[in-house]
Length: 251
Image (cartoon, rainbow, N blue to C red; front, side, top):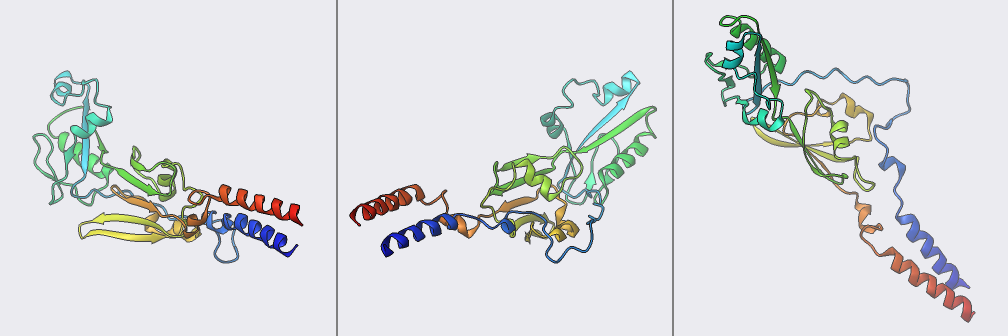
């Protein structure tokens, strides 16, 4: 009888070991008792252009000659591949070399500010022109315990950490939400930051807002080593069930 109870207890323990605490799954929890109903996320500053960025520039005009000069009438200019291949790089000194105009310093400017500067410059040479500028190298890579690992192209000017993870299908059950790595590149090299997505304070961090070239890595929980994904529980439980049956018969 004691052996039977012991085997039953083992089965229960094995089943419970495959469970994960809800605290390890929920995002943006209150680390202290909640004292307010709202949590404010500071407004994200617009991205500032850096050396190495690529800008797609399109000049529109109602004048046929001007339109032809800037090749506005090409049918495939909205294609993302076309935009990248026909974009203009920001050189290591932070300058943009566009068409016939002299180099324009764009480092530290937002995309809209670059657009405005080009508009003012072209207005000196052409009438009735409209300039549109788009950052085409905005990509984020999401790796690890997510549904769909990969590199994602962002077509908007802003995206945050949670939205980026959502693009990859979200974090899997055994992804470690308390220790997500964010690799960010700068002039001084790459730096790894560790973020706790279960803490609401993540919304206050400047790292919450993704920048072009960021890499997000979600590692697996240690408990994954003892889950159905990596351990043959079905075989173990079947064997235990047979043993329990044999013991019951021989009693």
